[in-house]
Image 1 (cartoon, rainbow, N blue to C red):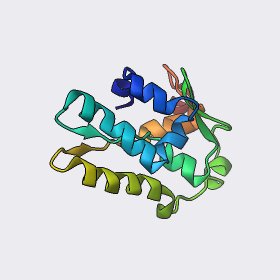
Image 2 (cartoon, helix red, strand yellow):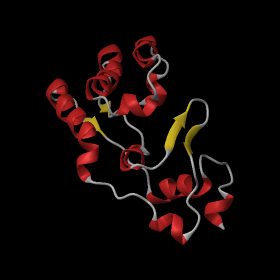
Image 3 (cartoon, helix red, strand yellow):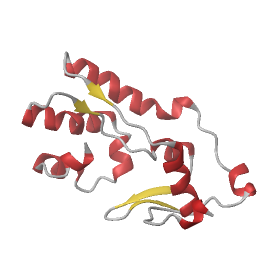
Amino acid sequence: MRQAGRSLPEYRSVREGVPMLESCLTPDLACEITLQPVHRHGVDAAILYSDIVVPLYVAGVDVDIVPGTGPVLGKPVRTAADVAAMPVLDPSQVDPVADTISMLITELGDTPLIGFAGAPFTLASYLIEGGPSRQYLAPRR
């Protein structure tokens, strides 16, 4: 969705000045962004506007999505002590995503809604590497 949405002027307009993770966690905005390609192009399904690092962010991990780079962590997780210090996600912390989904189900009617999730290896790689990488040497070590 984000890749397709980036080409839409209405996407760029509503995202102007709004950080990525904030836009994912603002149900009205995430709903609007999800619906944009459906309204403009009449696609077969909507893809939930979100990001795989949202659970890390709402749990309290110091992660930001840096434009042109991707997810960047304030401090990589590389030791057993780092793992032990990781915050625990309370399911209620992702309520904004559930709220977005509820809104979309009402808006979409018979149009399917597709969600995506990051594989545990992808999230672990970001945590260990500290951000995106072509080689992911730290996770491989």
